[in-house]
Length: 168
Image (cartoon, rainbow, N blue to C red):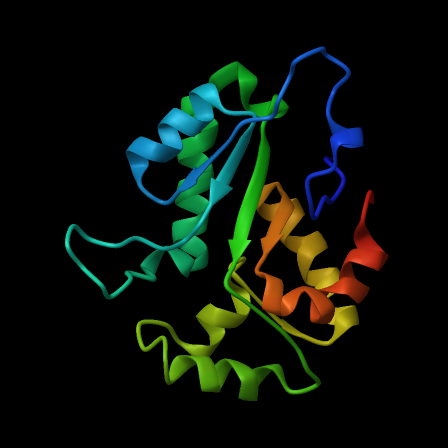
């Protein structure tokens, strides 16, 4: 099982002269197939914008859709799958003792999803620090996601989780 990583650090790169890790991310079949075949890291984003659209499609946030995306990557990667690192682009981090209330607030904005779908998705991290540490371990076990990209406004909230999981 790959250790958790939460940022790019030159020291983590393999010691091959001139080597740079390539991350390709998205949600669509074509981009994930390309990433599986060519990249070092496959970034799962969970968001699709239809051509010309401004309203995102969040249906890929549902656990069955994440299962499907990971299976697509696994099939497209073939023998190289075990060498890939899977990443998730996290849209929200909310450290709280009341995750249901926080998810309900998000449902008012993200009407395509239920509270349960938001709480189970790898693209939102909502709960206590202890809960999120265990949840990230569970998600790594289920989907193999070991690298998380967190938006800057959530870095302070996420720091205690990084401290507990980095390199484990």
